[in-house]
Length: 122
Image (tube, rainbow, N blue to C red; front, side, top):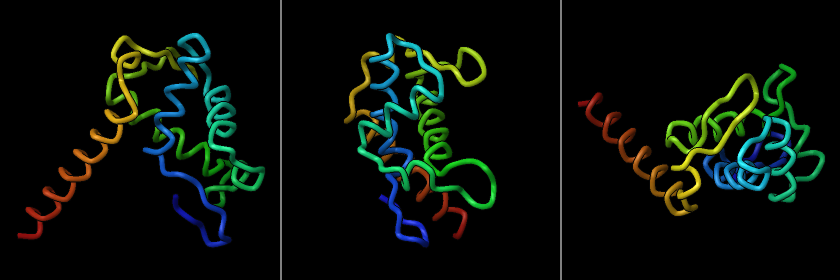
């Protein structure tokens, strides 16, 4: 979990990816951003402060921001597809993905970023 300056902690986007995918599955394979956010917040037992924490000076919540990245992460794994503005559906790949798969892909991405970063400093 990461912590902001006022001490409110929220899980990372990678940690939110699995509950987001499960939320879409439980909703029958298709869900809106709002439905996903509510289900993830419930599953992670986020309190009102965590749910309403703003990202920067804008109107967007940090929870909404991290879930947007979680959905992007899942989309890049071909686990979900964007049906339209703010609406997502699970794919056949997404139905087979496990929480371990998400962790593995995240570790692979971090390793690739480190490798790229090291080679650019040489």
